[in-house]
Image (tube, rainbow, N blue to C red):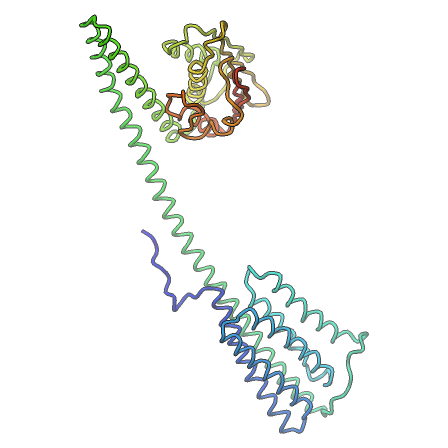
Length: 426
C-alpha cells in the first residue's frame, strides 16, 4: 500500500548533496588552478603564479575543512576567499585576461551550495560577486591597473583558458541544480502518489466506520425498545414502591442510551449524506420539533414561542435544520432554571441577503464564559450535572458547517443563552 523507502545510494538528502558538491567543487577548482600555476610559472609570469599558488592553497584548505564536516564554515570561508582573491588578481592583470569571468560561476555556486534554510547566506553570496563584477567592469571606478606584462597572444590564450575553467565550474553548478530538481520532482511525485493512496484508504475507512456506526446504532435500538416495553409491562405486575423505583431508574438509563444512539445516528447522517435542498416552511418545522420534544421531563412547564418573519418556504437542507433545532431546544429544556416561575424558549427566524438567520434563546441556567469556547467540542460537558452524551452541540456545529453556515453563542450564567445561526439558502 505504501511506497518502499527510496534507495539511499540513489537518492541522497539534499543537504548532504550540497555538502558533497562543496568538497567536489573545491577539489576540482584546485586542480584547475594548479594547471594555471604551471602555465604561469613555465611562461615566467611569477606574479600571477604566486596568486595561483595562494588560491590553490585556499581551495585545498576549503576541501580539508569540508572533509572535517565543518560544512557551513567551509562554504563561507571558500566563497569569501575566492571573491577577494579574484578581485586582487583582476587588479594586477589586464582586463582582457578575463579573471572577472570567475564571478559568474561564483554566483552559480552560491545559489547551488545554500539550501532553502540558508536563504540569507545564499542571497548575500550571490550579491557579493555581482557587486564585485560591476566594480571591475564599470570603467568609471578606475580599478584597472595595467601591471600585467602579457603580450596580445598570451592574453587571448589566457582568456580562452579562463573562459573554459569558469565554464566548467558553471556546468558543474547547473548540472547539480538540475539533478537536485529532478530528484525533488521525483520525490514530490512519489509523495503525491502516496498521499493519494492514503487519502483513498482514509476515505474508505471513514465510509466503513460511518456505515458501521449507523447500522450498529439502528441494530441497538430494537432490543432497547423491547427492554423498555418489558419494563413497562413488569411495572403493572407489582405495587411495590421500591421495585417500581428500580424500574423507573432502568427506564431512565434506557432513555439515556436511546438518546446517545440517536446522537450517533445524527452524527453519522450528517457525515455520510450530502446536502439535500428542499422547500422548508420554518413555522411548520419548528412546530414539528416542539411536538417531538414534549415528552422530555420539564418540557410541559416551559412556554415555547416562535417568530418567523419570512412567510414563504426557502430551499435548504430540512433534515439538518431539524437536527440543529432539535438539539438546541432539547438542551434548553434540559438546562431550564427550575427556580424561575416563567420559563421560556424562543425561536426567531429571518431571511437576509440570501441567508436564514436563526436565534434559539432561553432564560435557563446559562453558560459560563469559560465553557462557551468549548461547548461545541466532541464529548465536552460544561457541568458535572450534565448527563448527556456530549455530542449534541458538536453535531449542531458540524451540521451548520456542512451547510456552509456559522454559529456562535452568547450567554451569562443565570440569564439563559442565545445561539445565533446563519445558513445560506436559495
